[in-house]
Length: 420
Image (cartoon, rainbow, N blue to C red; front, side, top):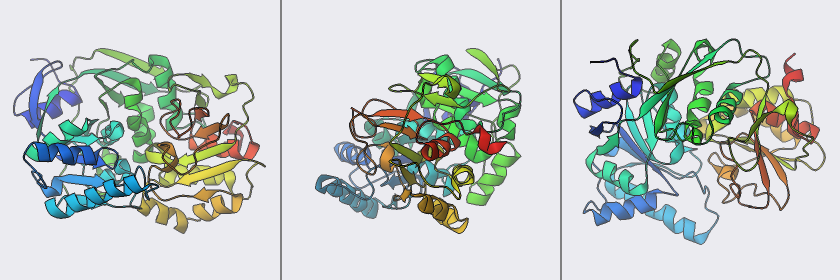
């Protein structure tokens, strides 16, 4: 038999027999997650299946209130209460208002470890691929089936191997890598396939930076964005939980759909322009673009390392006149660490506002909805028309460094001079 990719190995272990790309497998899942935009539908589906207020294993199911947190509307409050009541009755774990974004909480709280198979009722569940987890987003009904039975059917995806070589220039970060790749392959460049990231550049990145890359695998259409579990990964996981890991590495003779190799040595900061994530250009090719708002945070770039990068640029400066900066920590623990490190004080003194740990401005239900015609530079993962709550605004995506340099300048600005 041929060698296997990371995805094929994880599905083989969880399905009980060897499987390969395009096979259909019924597999055991290690964890299931729903957020406040999807959990109410899953709870309704569970009841329709005859599993009212029941889950297969309460220790392996979590509900997270992060998208509209705290609630901006009466109707949303009713949905939040439904989640709280379900968690209390079923024993499932509830992360309530202020805990943070689901995709930060699951790894941070030790719920996922290398070798796991995880599904979440949210498209950016692919984030945990940075920890050697096959994690993928599913609809609320499929999520309900997994919550009820601990199993789900899958079509094993083919895998695209992505190798990043060279040396990352100063002022260029993980966000620039994944934006560049998205621009090169396109928004449908990996549809229903797994991305397997590797190479010396990935090896040098922190676990947090790797999560930024895996988080955006879905923006290329991929089911997962996988990496091997090296010593950095295993140390990070051990520091955040006690579950046993089962790391998986690809075989040397694994069969890939294709291999993409990118030398990043001359890579410039990248910008995704409205209104698609694959509309990517080097920052130097962008015409002068004034901004009204910057967003620092989200499940893509709301971690402590991201705040450290932004604070390095912002410290001792003020936001440009007429520019707002919304900072959304990815979790309560990150918020506390950022306070202790002085980053939050740096942002506030510069003129920023800090919002509740969670999805906040990214999802567009509240917290920083832009006005008609305004340009926003954001560290989020999507810039679709209307994504932040106003279809007449324009969202540009960049790294935390690019956002920080831009809110000081009043226009989308190159961060590299701050790292010389």
